[in-house]
Image (cartoon, rainbow, N blue to C red; front, side, top):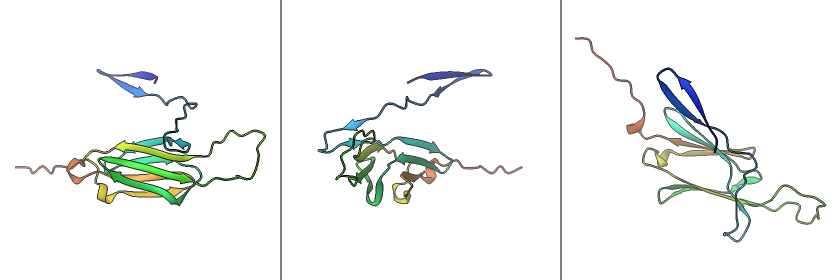
Length: 140
């Protein structure tokens, strides 16, 4: 993975660059072709946001759960064009699976998710203990 260095007054900061687009991970240990969906993760003061690309997944075929300290995304994709024989095909049909370690800073009970246009958005709210708090200062 490439890294770039930004110079700032009195400090250096490393910035990760995007991974090459041609890397696609296919797992074949589950009995079917299973892809690791690509994700973007963002953080705000109140939550972590995870965006996962899961094209072709319908809500009824989506299993999102916390299990043994992990957030697990498991999606089944219905076969399409099963009766057609293609002369050339680049788009592989398969299920999706990805797991992320989740620490105690995430409040699993308040997690929300939405699926729209092939993008799964997961809202992972932070626990109150780790959220930034403003401290009031009293003049004496």
